[in-house]
Image (tube, rainbow, N blue to C red; front, side):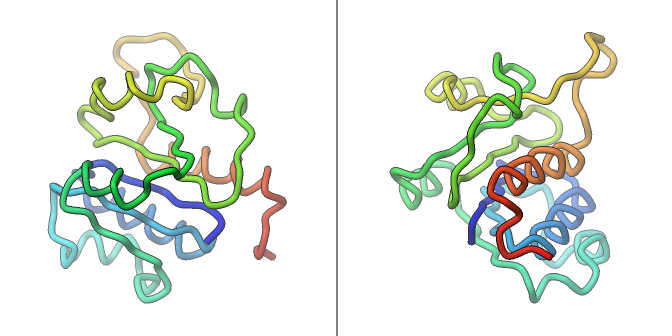
Length: 156
């Protein structure tokens, strides 16, 4: 797969289902890091992904340490409102990983602090009440920029 989307402890089934559908439709691998805020069998998760689950290249990790151990040496970008660089500032490569945090808290600072050079953000207005975009929208925005930079390889 040319690209990998990683969800760190996702909490809302329809978000993950929608992201799974996008990943299946773009040939993107989906990586889920536990604990999950739902069961993979959740009806809302399945409904949001419709009948795309069998097309999905899905990887599930017990914790973030297992994820980093199994993907050692891979280029990982971290979607966060705390980044200095915009997602469009990066030059992405095949087989890169783009990690997004849980809906209520994002990616923990101890992880982000180790990877500030590959932290990316989506521009938004400055407003304490509009803290971030919906997770599935954020994934779509960044994923399609990565796919565009890679020439929409294997997509029609």
